[in-house]
Length: 130
Image (cartoon, rainbow, N blue to C red):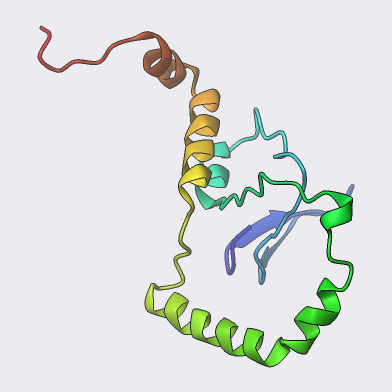
């Protein structure tokens, strides 16, 4: 979902209606959702920004007072957030994508397009060969 797009929806068994989305979808999970076979999957993948957190924190190393510590630093955190918002606005609200996110998105695209997948995995592309 992206802001301000017109979407057609319906309540089950009712007449379809259109509305504008006023939010972005933020999802968190331990695994990526299964989106194979979804119509418009390329557009969905293009809009995704995937943030990986590959390291686990053992239970004995977890800071159970973290929320309290963050609350104590709320003024600084808020100031940093405003500075980041100004920078984001300068970039026309285009978020920086981590390299590992881009790689995962490329893999998802290849899985969706079996011809591209076959060509990239099994064929050598060389423009000098005639």
